[in-house]
Length: 211
Ligand code: SF4
Image (cartoon, rainbow, N blue to C red; front, top):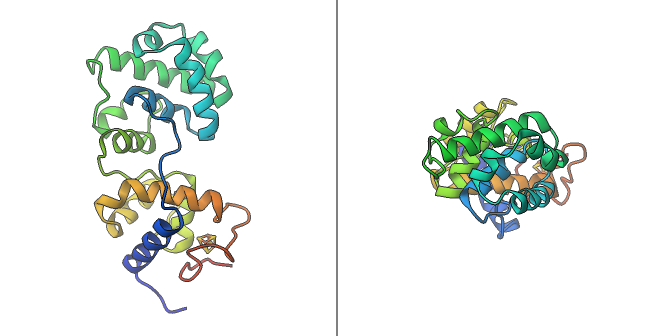
């Protein structure tokens, strides 16, 4: 296959994915901004389905950030345990709620650097929060996005920060939020880690790793 520029690959990827997944969107429940942020914290190495179920239970018990902030850590831990990484997620949830109530005056900051001051919130979750809540252009590079972008040929890196930079060079800003969701859809449906279904994949016409 002739070598295609990354810009061209990005254009073709965008066209194919938006056609294949016209309803693509974040699969975390979104009722209130602060709750979405908490769901983002809980989503690390956990399915969105599990996060949505567990967070429903969490917010039934602790409906606002004041009640989360004042709850004993062990009580929060016992509710969020099904999401895994219990100790670190409990610390993150508590730290987020305390900052929300204390430093941020009851709002979620539209600021990746400020959000990354919360224990356990990295760039991926901070990008998810500002993108989903404020529509601030930001690419969420999760495990699916990283895998898909490398296989297609938009990046050569496994480092999420590098992948994000490579993607920012070739996707226009107004596509940054959606391309993250679209990559997840492709990764879940066709481009699975162990057994990619290249024969049915909408990117098979140009993907450099099709098998
Ligand atoms: S063609 Fe295969 S390797 Fe390439 S994106 Fe599709 S499923 Fe993944």
